[in-house]
Length: 433
Image (tube, rainbow, N blue to C red; front, side, top):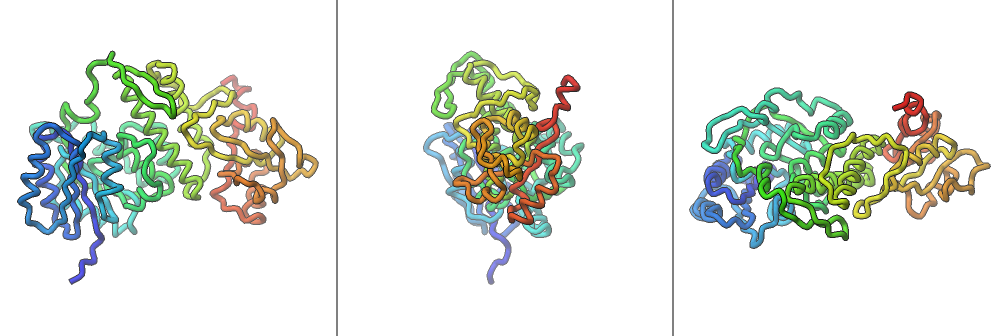
């Protein structure tokens, strides 16, 4: 009889977890869902982790398809995650697990039920129970977070995006309690910057026009101990490490590695946001993109100067445009409005946001230039050799222009955006802020 249940992959990635991995593997093998691939992947551990995995899998006679992978060299969390998704899993729904956590036997079944009930959303999250090294239930920061936080899925997509940028740590849902559709990963392809925070990677991708559901039921025991990833690499703060920023090799101290990992994460998020913008999944929100970019530029500059990162306000108050970061894609923008408002918007945009044309209905201006940027007629937008990723409307006549672009010229509304007030007026300056 054909199994009509969707194919699911439960992956468990392990590294140096000999004390806990047997419980994690046993819990994965005990899942009661019957169209399940279980991928157990070790990242070149040098303790007894692999031996304990193989002791359980070599004797397994159950219904699940089991794949065991051992990396010959340590990849790190980011590249290990990418290797698993790109090469090992085959399910249309992917459930995440770690080598020190314990999944409830009904975990996959419950996730699949909610996934199908909600029309196969991009991401499924659920509650967790926190435990210590000895396996005793505790309530520290994560358990409190899950107990007290509001349900992010009840907010609009825009509200979730803004909330994430304002308070990105901790995540509303962490990797030990997440599942996501294969299509969510494929929509953006393999991550270029391979961030070590795979839960941030996938949650942020779901924020780019995706959907999610939250199960208020604990389905995993999340273990907290001194060898957790977030507790590693804290020793030897003066040790020097060499990192890569684009084509440049930069030396930083070991204590700065955490900030470097966060830098790679935000760089990947920026790339994913640009990809979503170009695919029409996401409209260009000026504040959203500028917040992302300003975080990136601050870290990029500080790493090049070999300085320890210090937090700054994510919204730059200076009207001087930030320079471009060479290893990130540039967003191509056409500004509708070549008057003072459009020119003031230009002065606010980082150079990463490349203005390729001004668009204006005033025929007298056509053929002229503003700071070497051509002024064209709206009908000429389709003639540009490299079409813009967005048309930024910098005018008080926003709705007539929006109607012109979408109803007369047939542009998708997602390809248009509206310049916020601070970019086109002197309001902030008059207040002295």
